[in-house]
View 1 (tube, helix red, strand yellow):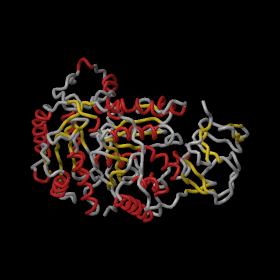
View 2 (tube, rainbow, N blue to C red):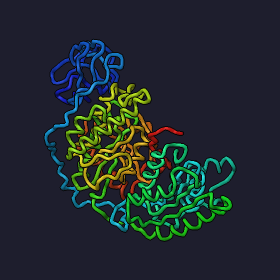
View 3 (tube, rainbow, N blue to C red):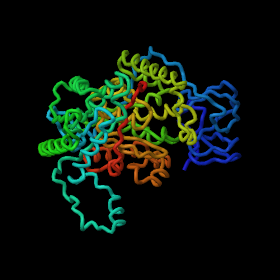
View 4 (cartoon, rainbow, N blue to C red):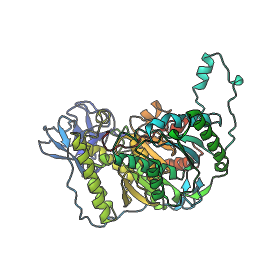
Length: 532
C-alpha cells in the first residue's frame, strides 16, 4: 500500500496515508521526500521549503497561507498556516462535465411508495408533529401508545430489564406480527422552538414541519398544539398549502387548551389515528425507476480521508443518480467556504450564482454577530485528523456533490427540483443539516464519517458511510458501509457501484439502516434568530 498521496498535480501538499516518522524517506513519482517532522496518517506535509505568505494547494485549489516558514517534508498545523481561499469570479464560462455511463442502471428499479400525486417515497410512515416544544410530551406519548403495541419500537434492551426483573419473553404479550404490515412505523418529531422566539423563527419552523408533513415518505399526520404558541396552526396550514396546494393526506389536529383534560384529548388522538392507519396500510410498494431517487449527500465527524475515499465515492453515486434523472442535494454551506469558486462555476443559472453567494454572505454576517466566522467550522476532532483549515475541509466535503452542474440553489427547507444537483443552505451541524435536506425533499440520505456519528432521521433512511476501515470496524453498530478499501487502492468507481446497490436496497426497504435499527430519529430545526 502507498504511504503518501498527491491528490492533484497542481498541489504542493502531500497526504500521509500511514503514520510517518521524522527522518523517514518516502517517494512519489520518483521524487523523494525526507520528513522534517512526524506526520500522522491523514495529515499533510509541504513538498518544498515554504516562506511566510506562500499559498498552499490541495485538490488543485488554494486552501491555506503559510504563517511560519515550513521546511520541505514538514507537517502543516494550525500554528504554521491559516485559512485562505481564492477570489470568486461570477463571470465564469459555461461549465461542462462528462456524464457517467449509466447504461447498466437504465432499467433498474427500486420498490417505492407511490403517492396519489405520483411522487415516490422510500417509506410509509404516520407522523406525529408538535407545533411548539411544550407539546413534545404529548407527541411522544401518542407515539408510545401506538408504536409498541403495533409492533414498532421494540428495543433490543427490553430483555435486559426483563431479565433483571426475573421476567421472560414467554410471559409477555409482545406483538410478534404487525397488524399493519405496509406501514413502516409510527414516527414523531420533537421541536426546540415554536414560542418565545421571533415571528420569523415561528414561520420558519412551520415551513419545515409542513415540508415533513408533505414528504412522500409520510402517509398522514397528527398535529398537536397548546393554543397560545407563536407557531399558530393557521401559519402551519398556510405553509402546507404553499408547499402543496393539493395536500390530501389524513390530517388530525388537537389543540390542548380546547379539551377538558389531557386524558380525553389523548384518548381521542389514539382512536382517530388508529382508524386512519387502516387506510394507510392499503398502500403497497411497487417498482419505480431510479430516477425517483432524491439523495441528500452529507458528511459529519469528517477526517483527513473524507475527501479521498467516502466523499468522492458518494459523488460518483450522486452523478449516476442525476444522470438517470434523479435528484441530489448538497448542503452544509459553512463546509463550502473555500469551494465557492467551484460551486459558482457549476451553477447553470446566473441567478443561482448570485443567490448562492448572497446566502453565503448572509451566513457569514450572522456568524460575525456572534464574533465568529463560518471559516471556524472545523472541530477539534476534524483538526486532530488532518482538516487544518476550513478550505481543506470544504474542498473535501464538496466532493460529495460529484461533478454534475448545479440546477438549483435552495434556502433552508425550500423544495429541491425532482432532478439535478441542488445546493441547500444548512449549517454543518449534522442533525440540523439532515433535517433541512429531508425538508427539501431527499428520500435517502448518504452520510460519510471518519470519526463516527449515529445521526438518523425520523422519516428518511440515513446510510452511514465510513471513510476508513478502522472506524467501520470499531463502530460497526452505527456504520452501514465501508469506503476504507479506497485508501487501500480499490478503485473509486467499484466502491461507488457497491454503495449504489446498498442505496437501492435501502430505498426498497430491503436493508434497514443502522440508525433506524437503533431508533436514532434525530430532528433539530435550524433556529436562526434570537430567543425572546
